Length: 59
Image (cartoon, rainbow, N blue to C red; front, side):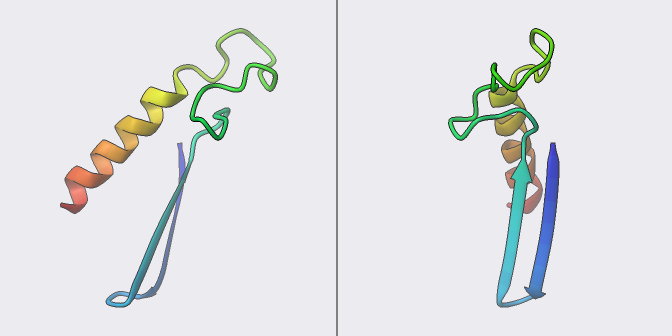
């Protein structure tokens, strides 16, 4: 999981981007992109665990 934090102002704007390596736009693993079976693992679980942890820390 890769994430990027960008802050233009601590009060007005906060953007958080997260990328899951090997995930498609539907969050599932990209099977045509992998060079070995199950290379990217469970990208859906990876994404939703990250979002859950982020929400728990933030709220």
